[in-house]
Image 1 (tube, rainbow, N blue to C red):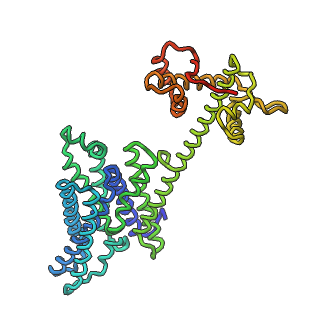
Image 2: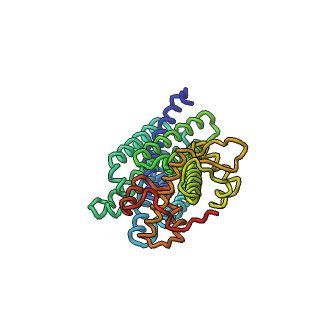
Image 3: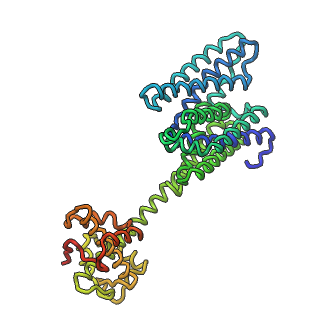
Length: 435
């Protein structure tokens, strides 16, 4: 697959990979601009231009199959569709999705009607025009690959040169306009780039599936990073990989359509990113949530142990704590308490069980220090809420319990400065019942 023997096949795969790179790069800006359907509307808007260009070339005495002529007609029709969307957006109160839906349906319906009409022209041979709807890489020749590669490279270079401007346009259009940036011209230029890669990708992927080539790599890259430069490179790489693998598999198995395989490859990459993406993936989020719940449970256990020791007199680490008091203090089930105790022993916060009596637990020296720190942070936050948020002491424990687990060192120092002078571990502002 990586070393395809046919020269034409290698050219097709390389051209498709370059197209995927450009689509991934431009599609990232579309995604951040919240115009994911723009490519879909634009691709459907090219169909009337393809039909009209075919008819004009047939009337002029040609076959109507000249690729440059068809792409020229598609470009004009696509630009008209973009201008129509901008006009609806800027002159009415309709939203972008309404404008896109209008252009998509009206232009595509017009294109279907025009294609049916031009097929009745004398000498017209419209066979093969369906490749612009579904995509057909096998019908491309060397000149088509060169055209796709040149357009893809120029679009990618232009997007990178205008990275700062497009970033500002995508994230804060109002600020860009207030500081004097030509927002409308930048918006039109971005749509021109989208038009360029969409029109050149019609024969490879088809106007129906080109939207997947534009959006899926960008959406997949979003699961891996929160930084725009890294997202752009990831999106471009995933688009290139989708084009490479999809075209390669299609070349190895002649009955499989290239456009569909490219989209399926991109969808597989998206699924992997959805599950395992380090920034927003499902599995890392579940692991982080499990880790957070484990930390919260550990902090609740240590604070409950310290409060029980406090109720017995001067707290010391080697003082035994009955399990029954822990169960009553936090309303834990016995199974949940066993799990929390096991985690605490793994982290060396409890002494190992010795002897037949397992109804008593002992905090270790590190565990007692951690319990003191957690209790102190909790009570500092309680005092802050009572002093500055006017929360009743009878309700402050619940409110503090929601925040104390994310208190960092800087926040603790700020609380200490705000509530100075305070003892090392202030007394609880509410009654703690330990039976």
